[in-house]
Length: 66
Image (cartoon, rainbow, N blue to C red; front, side, top):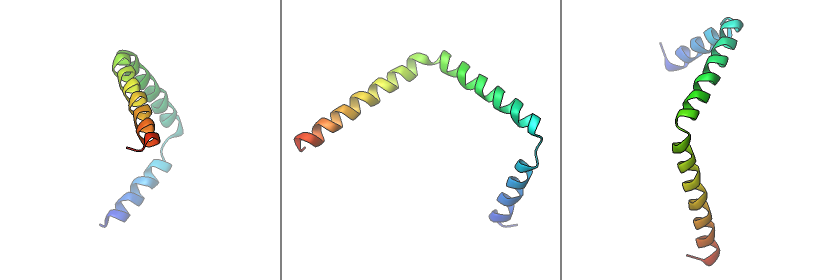
């Protein structure tokens, strides 16, 4: 069985899945992501600040010509 056939079968089974199940899964996934974010808020805040500082530094260096 080729990889294309395998992926087609997986896509078909996803489409044919129970919509109520997918709604429950989405709600549970949203809850898990939110809970994970709240537990690791400091980590994500640190990463966000690092990205902001890095972006501003790169913009400054690009403007200056380095």
